[in-house]
Length: 218
Image (cartoon, rainbow, N blue to C red):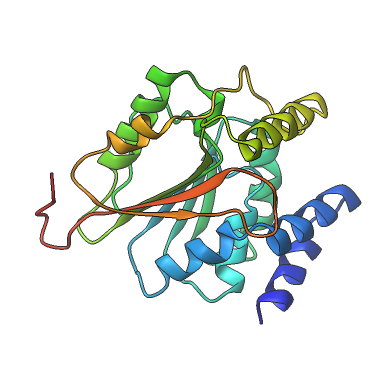
């Protein structure tokens, strides 16, 4: 089922590069399926911050998740690609936006591989903006590599330098978050899972859950 969903998403794109990139990303990156399992059953609207060309939103739909989906990204070209495909799915929308600004959303939030393009202070502001969007019973799910000096971290850094050189990713800097940045997000129950899969990258999944009652653990 998941393999067929990946193929359907990849087939949406009209360039060989994007079809190959999408298929490889969905097949090899364990974060997508891990996030889906943590969102399954939720009806809260979901915001994908740094949504790119909409790959994750389309994959969610192909895997049967029906909550309202919105995505924002600063890259106008990728948003144009996503919007060109969004009409194929119900209640999916994308817009150009800046995660550094307050966000008009109330539900759950996903943020995959975004924080490491910003300095420490901006990372904290982006996390605060995202956390403010999480409704009771909702989650904020963050995936990023951690700056810890391990060989996985060094490989991740080198791969990101290559991605920037290829011009697929637009970024002013590389500054992977350290543990204290993510640990400073209070008011949630937290699940932390290594998210390496079959990759050499130093990725972790952080799942911040807000209690349904509105009461949180400080």
